[in-house]
Amino acid sequence: MVKIPLNKNTIGNAEKKALNKVFDSGYMTMGKVTKEFEKKFAEHLGVKHAIYVNSGSSANLLAFSAIQDNDKFREKKQKNEFLKPGDEIIVPAVTWSTSIWPIAQTGAKAVFVDSEPDTLQMKVSDIKKAITKKTRAICMVHVLGNAGYINEVREICKKKKLWLIEDTCESLGVKNKNKYLGTFGDIGTFSFYFSHHITTVEGGMIVTNNDYIANKIMSLRSHGWTRDMNNSSYYEKKFPDIDPRFLFVNVGYNLRSTDMNAAIGLVQLKKLEKFNQRRHDIGKIWNEAFKGLQQKKLIQPMKITKNTKASWFGFPIICETQEIRDNLRIHLENNGIETRPIICGNMTKQPGIKNIKYRVSGKLIGADIIMDRGIFWGSSPDMTKSEVNYVIKVVNKFFS
Image (cartoon, rainbow, N blue to C red; front, top):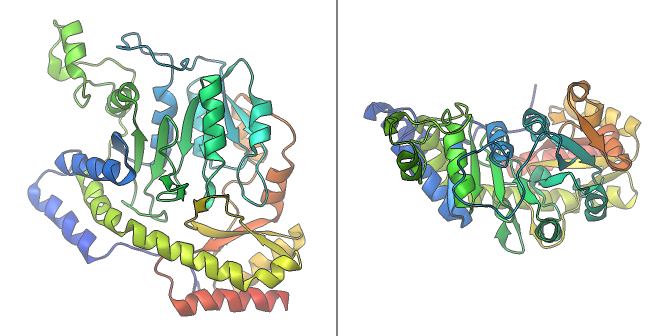
C-alpha cells in the first residue's frame, strides 16, 4: 500500500465550485475564463503575454514552432535568426522527452549537453562549447524545482543572438535573484499536469514579452487562425477578399484547452505561493535530516543553484552506487514510499532517440550518473508533518 505517493490531489471545494460555475454558464470551450486565467497568470509573473494550451508538452511544441522560419507574412523583423531545417538547438541530456521531440518536429537538430549530477542543470562551460554556426536557440530546462544558470545563459544568448527558451514545466513560481523562472528568456513554458506545482488537471502556459511571438503562438494554437491574434487587423487588410472570421495565415494545430480547465487554474493560482513555500520547507527539512548521509557520501540531494529559492518538485538524490540506488528504491517502495527515476535519465539512451537527428557535445558523464544512480520521491504541499518524518525514518533505517 502506498503511504507516500509521488503527488497528492490538491483540488478542493473552491475548484469544484468554479468548475460548476462554468458548467452552469453553458460555455465550456476556450472563452472568457481562459482569457481571465491568461491575464492573471501574466500579471503574477510580470510578463506581457500568457497563452493557455492543453499541456506543457504542447507549450513546448508551440515555443519551438514559434521560432521557425515559416511565416511569409511577418510584420516586423526580429533580432534573432529564425529556425530552418538542419539548424541546432542546445538542450540538456537530462530532460523530459517533450523538450526534445518538438525540436525534431520542426526539422531542427537537438544538441545534447551534459547535466551536473549535483544541481541536475547544464554547465555553462559545456553550453559554450556546444555552440556552432548552426545554433539558433538554447533550451534551458529548470529541473525539479531548481534553476539552471539562467543569468549566464541569457548573456550568452544576447551576445550570440540566439533564442532563449525556458522549459519551466517543473519549476513554476521558482525565483532566481527575485525574478520568476520562465521570464528571463524569449519564451517560457509551464505545465499544469496533475502532479505539478499547480494543476488544471491537464494544461500548460506559454509566456513571452515579444508581441510577434505571442501573436504567432495564438494563431498556431488554433489551426493557424487569426481570430485570437491581437494584430488580426493587419492580416485582414492584407487579405481583404477573405472572410475575416475565417482567415488562416499559419500552419497551425488545435492545442486549445477549455474554460473548465482554466477555472480550476484560476483557483489554483491563488494557492501557488503557499504550495511552493511548503515544498521549499519540506526540502529544507529533508536536507537537514540527511546531512549525515551526505557527509558520508552515501547520498547527494539536489544542490540548489546560487540565488535560487527552490520549490522542490520532488526530492531527488544521487546515491553512491547504482546498487545502493536499486536497493534503496526497493526498500522505499516496500515501505509505501513511491519513487521514480530522475526525469528520463540520459535521453540519448532512450530508444526513441534513434528516430531523430541529434548531436552530442562532449561526454555525458553526469547524465549517466543521474540515470544510473538517481532517484526521487514526492514532496507534495499537502504532506503532513508525520509523513515528512516517516520518510526520514524509512531512509535512515535503510542506511543504519
